[in-house]
Image 1 (tube, rainbow, N blue to C red):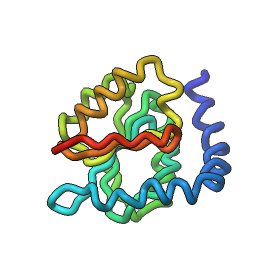
Image 2 (image 1 turned 90 degrees about the horizontal axis):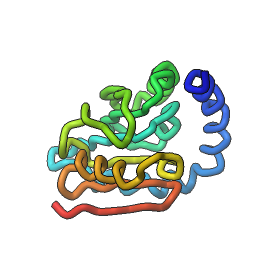
Image 3 (image 1 turned 135 degrees about the vertical axis):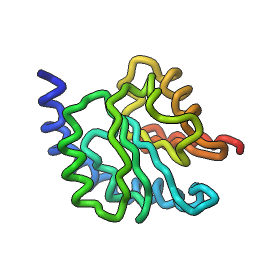
Image 4 (image 1 turned 30 degrees about the vertical axis):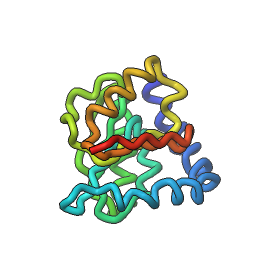
Length: 153
């Protein structure tokens, strides 16, 4: 029941949150351009993507893969994708951050997690998974914790 109701609540809360955090998010996500692959494409994984509230802050052409343990977010993501045509939606993966096995090793330039690490069971395991999916030189960012960890190539 909670998994079905939570997305509806989050849709309402994220619009207020995004208004308050807009300048902070623009600042955090402005550096994404420099993190793209040598081909110029930027592959971004959003961990616990929720309703896709960060999409509007991503760079044009950014290829976004979303991971969330709650399958009920998918219909809200579809709406957010339609509203944010500047990003290229790749796929939605139903998985917990501690086990993102459907996401290939070294396949992401950036991993973004917003308001996630404070509410998970195993932060260390999630960060291990983030490191696994990041390509050499990738970065993970959390606007909640202001976490920026750069990995050497």
